[in-house]
Image (cartoon, rainbow, N blue to C red; front, top):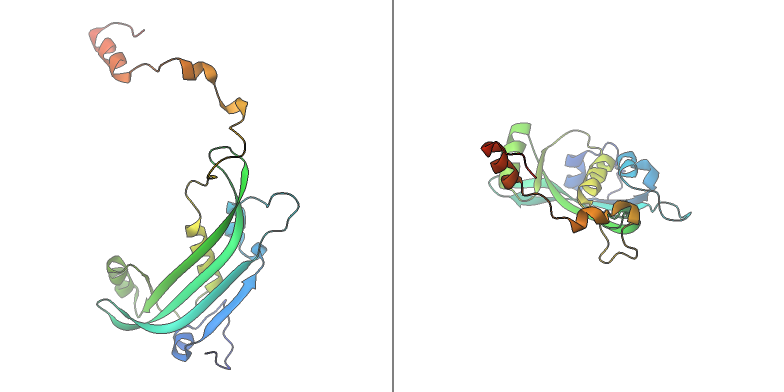
Length: 186
């Protein structure tokens, strides 16, 4: 249900947005999300970066130990290019972020309730930057160690040292024991 009132995603009045039960959705060019851009690689070939499709819905829901509170249900989808940590080649990766965020009256209440809740809890502010919040969620959705399921090409030879692989490494405890005895490790 959308009201006639226009909501600005850069300065969203969460209380009014939730009170109206509104929905905002749209898409932004990837270039607007500078931190996400800096964290990812340019797309392969001459392809342009994928835009970010997003949606935010305001509603009131029950929060454990806090009664009914305003919430934002946010969702964002895009595609990013990252470096595979197995083969060091670029890989395209669909990126999806979805989160429910509860809003309470004070920072202290938010800190206490956030520790108890599976959902995020923030202090209610007069103007929330929805674009920054969605970018934060996309950054959090990035994989810690991006990798292909199966790499098309093996790791380049320059990164594989066959000499080290064939010789067993010295046992560090044996080296320490030899040092304690006054002998030189072999």
